[in-house]
Image (cartoon, helix red, strand yellow):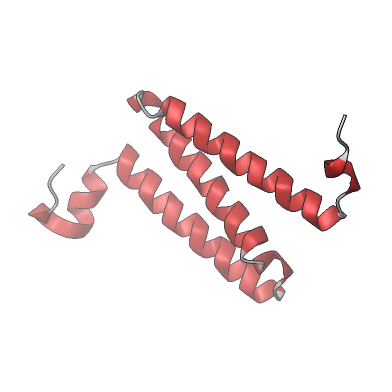
Length: 102
């Protein structure tokens, strides 16, 4: 058996594991896409994927605390708005008037 993964430095192992989690989440999203009832789960899974990419691949996780907090707050705000507009479509009309077609 090949032990190349075990012999990798810890940072590389973490990168490979995060990449595997991202691939698995893409597969799960692809399988769930046919069910409208699972759309909130897909949105939540997307939020986790975005956080992983920003935190690890863009290395915001190594940035100063204030930058990590701003990025996390921005992601929470954006995905809360997306999920809120999906669960309560009348919010779109409240914010954008009659211009929004559902």
